[in-house]
Image (cartoon, rainbow, N blue to C red):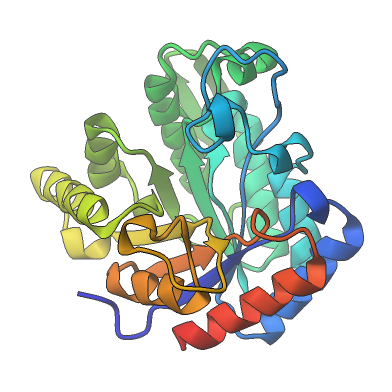
Length: 306
């Protein structure tokens, strides 16, 4: 069932035509003024000229052209944090295996502190073989590395002093301060569309970073995650679905089978409300290259979701 008060978010200007200080600041301020609940950033580093992997969301297996230019997700959120007071800031998603666990813990703690507890940590395993090669991390075993990273984050955020020894991470007994403002830790949401990912989400996370797919696909996936939570001895009602939509906005209604990849603002909002997601956030950076038009679409979406 849909939440009575479904939260509504917006992807922060970060890539394509929206790279730049002024765009980040203007969208962050506007989103807070319009009553959005959250702002989100993604994680990309490469647009390979001769890619080894096909990109599911791009034409002919290539990245969408907007992804050629991409700002760092945590840097963008830090800029937004400086010009906002209320709105939450999240990553959807941060490709966790690319990062050193202990440095990632420090970066996320710093952002949670500077936002006075407004951080949502969204982690995933995204990225192509070329990305993993470029950052010097093996793509094999990335699921196990994600598990290790979560364990390190939780240990650093909770313990004093901190000791960790497992797998590839060794932290000598140390004082690591400060701790996050949010206790016992910032929310951790995980992405993924496989049965292994669903099991991990149900067992380890505060919720699922879902992608916009047709309802007949989304609903059984969410049910699988809830069953995994029950199997792990957790309350499935404590998990939250955080749904990202990347629509191509149209002037005229589209066929139902094209939602939510395309549609009018009204169709997209109707789809979002019907998902039962705790929070839905929209990314309009691929449907327009004009900042004013992007903000206009955001305002219409927020009104349609009210």
